[in-house]
Length: 345
Image 1 (cartoon, rainbow, N blue to C red):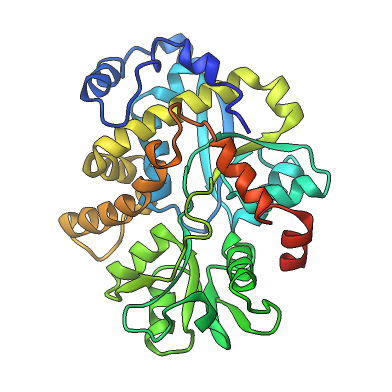
Image 2: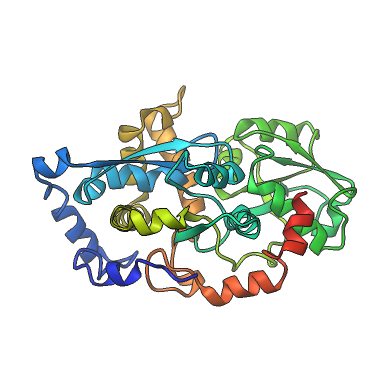
């Protein structure tokens, strides 16, 4: 699954030198922030982009906020509206039904949709490694995946890819996902923390930023063995194949702007969080002073940054997918009809 617009990006002088740790490139980005003419702003094309959790956390929203605030979307002639959706499964469904042009789901629901004949593709891999994993309280007796037998596992909601991940990991560890584990809706943030503390649930199948939010609520977590999935590509921007053809300019421009926002976010997480609050005021936590809010949301963002970096996936261009890792995922049953269809039916 190559990055279809990467040659376009590589040949663009604005992004050719991009490196997540390049202060020189960061300086170039900052110097070009205001190179947007009033006419370009007037000609902006509006794009609705769906993110795949009910809340827009610092780990998801910062890159969008930076790209908006620093003018990267406007430079591409775009006005981007970010809309939180229920989960990755719904993100795929809403693109398939043309309610959204672009969403940001994990790989698994996309693979299932492809198997069902939906002509839909990932055109930009945003998270190079998966944030999803099974987590338990630090003092939990669960030490390995097989120990989850008979346990109750909380997911953000039943449309989350966490459902698919939990069932797949259970099956891979020799458990029957239909009878050996119990999946329940645990919600997000403080809610699953309370359920874990009261032992109403034993584990979570959520993802990096949610786990950081739970730790912000005072509960230390431990990730159960995730070696089965840790090198596989995760969330990316998807669109229908005909949209990729007919809206190529808009989608390539969107990808370039998002990549720039990612570079800034990785290099300046504190500044990215403050920009997030300015662009999307509803993301700022209530009942906390500014310093505490920023500190906790930087913790959330830092939980996501390892998935944003190119190096762990062995790729060199923003949005690219490591095709060898993807093929291994498919060969392992990660995307095969016999595995995913059975596990999610």
